[in-house]
Image 1 (tube, rainbow, N blue to C red):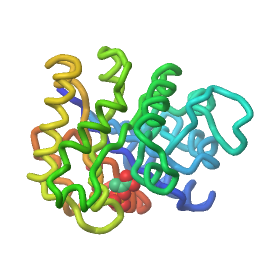
Image 2: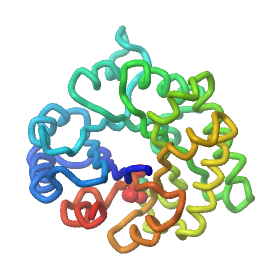
Image 3: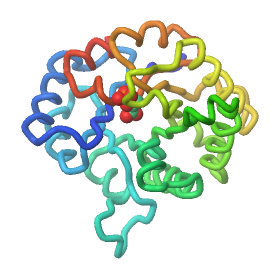
Length: 248
Ligand code: PEP
């Protein structure tokens, strides 16, 4: 059985006080979440503080990005090794905001996935098509390319450490979301693709989560779908009340 996985991506929101308050509220309501894995991804700068707040709560710490080199003259960057060192278990890789605003391509995403796995961090690997790509009927082509390039040269036995997040770009932060059926269709396609790249049992074990305007009101129907194993939540993870409802 695949353990449901829910991650909150706080993006570049919150100040220290808000971040601490949000984490404390989650700890109070979600302590030792049963049969679910709950991860929060605050901005880098608050990771140390939040780690102390969620310590021993069962809620895990994730980061939103990292650079693939372990160390060096890369002013302003943070490495996967550093994130592991500070207590992260997860890191988001290939988020559409990184791909679009910071020009991250599939090749860089592949380097980041490898760097993440090599230091024992589990990547939340984001893929998804633009609206015009969906309208041109190219969703599967785009998602296939992102997954094949992202997983290139990664041993199949490592696939189960990766969480794939299917996030149609047109649904991120827009209030529009894919219907549960549209999402299921792509999740099922991804699971078959992973089976083709590895084998059926790895594909069955791998968690594939959905992201794109997930809220308390729409999570239930999404989570009912056979191949949807959880959610990557942006906006709605910034309110303790709504994130708690989503998890529950
Ligand atoms: C995200 O940041 O990955 C995301 C899905 O955001 P939102 O839930 O706000 O659409």
